[in-house]
Image (tube, rainbow, N blue to C red; front, side, top):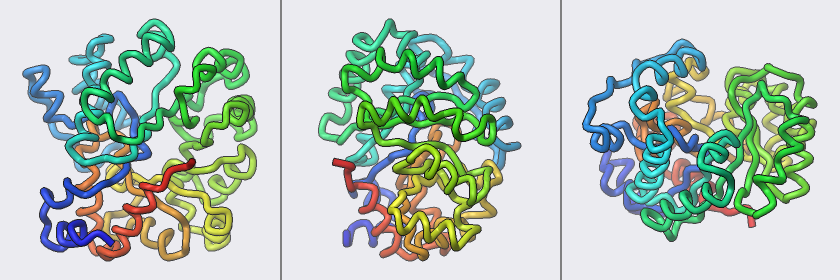
Amino acid sequence: MNNLFLEGLKEGNREKLLQVPKSDLHNHSTKGCRRAWLEERLNRRFPAPPETFAGLIGMQEWFRATIKPFSNTTEGMVMRWEGAFAEAKRNNIQRLSMNFGAPEIDELGGMEAFKTVIQGLRRAWCPDTVFEPEITYVSCCDAAEAAEKMDTYLACGFFKSLDVCGGEDVQPMDAFLPLYRKAEQYHLVKRMHVGESGTAEDVQRAVETLGLDEVHHGIHAADSEKVMQFLADHRIQLNICPSSNVMLGYAESYQNHPIKVLYENGVPVTINTDDLLIFDSSIENEYLRLYQAGALRADQLDDIRRQGLKTND
């Protein structure tokens, strides 16, 4: 147990919380920096996000209208990536998983150029962080077609995990099998965004159909004792983003966030940022919000913090 972390929570002392090793395993790279960091680089003020968005579509519309137009070039994308690594340094993130899409890789000219940029940013800001880059595909993609091109991105061994995101129930689960079979070929950790807007049963179905190792979100598994038992028995970790869940309307509040029920039913969980640039809540703040809301005790949050630092090796 980390006494500095416990003190930081109980005292509301962010400086103490910042010093403690943490992880961020659910981090969308182009939205992984703090708004204040980007404002300083662009010499421009952006509006604070609303307390709640009109779901995922409302969030995306807000981002496209308020922030993205001012950093929508390749240089702007790289700037936002740099800000994500800078935040990892500021918050003592010792294990970092950031996702990247194939179009972003292609925009930089392919894997070698992409690797050079990302590795340079990591060396500059957080060289000692365990970095686990994740390749991601959107849920509306043609998975069979995408899988045919995946060797281009995976053959060099840079990526450590696979994710599918961008909305649930867009296609049947088995439509994504070509992607996950390719991930198995390259020994990637298999993840998927599921169970945030969808049901507990969707979570179990995704794990069983696609052979998932972990789930991004998965909070509605808390609605089913059977599904929670399944996740606990199979040690399927849920990488949860509290502010994202609350602000998108998928969780009622921090006080009543499903993470409490999931944790108390033995489901492995971690706490993450999702889209820091949008939700404006960095890792230390996520822990503090849950503690101050009374969702979890300080020792429970420290246990969750330590869960996130366990590597998949």
